[in-house]
Image (tube, rainbow, N blue to C red; front, top):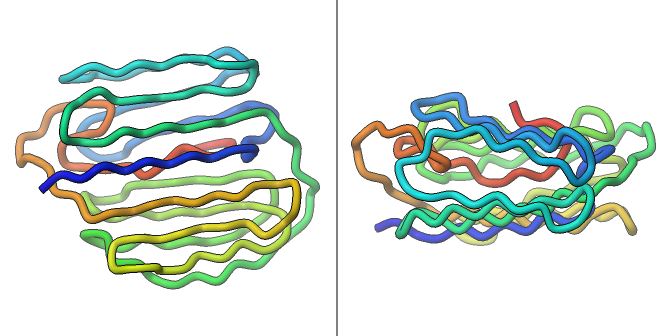
Length: 182
């Protein structure tokens, strides 16, 4: 039974640039080109709304009933160029979610197969990914003034039909929260 995924990501982008992309059946690309300017390219079987609230901030809400309510806040912020380390457990969400930390200032979320996510966060300081309950994960950066990122990843099922969309039928991307999703 489809569930709802709500994600709020404050103060996490770098220089106000962000890209959201799915790489399986169905394609949706959200690009924040400059602070306050957003470009949404998508093929949606339902309805999607992209709103720019303040410069460097965007909210994407899908209005496809029974799929998800994705709210993404991406303000402008600069990170120091420091390396950090991350605890990387495996998470069962109709597949596997992997969190990696590489260098500061960037984050990448990839859906590689339906129900499988590869999340690479590049955040200064220390990031911790913890599994709360099966199918749910919480990522919190513990650097004061940078971000408190909580990503909820419930178990979700979709219809079998392959229809391009903002939340593709065979793919569920979790959140947009940094410089580049690709």
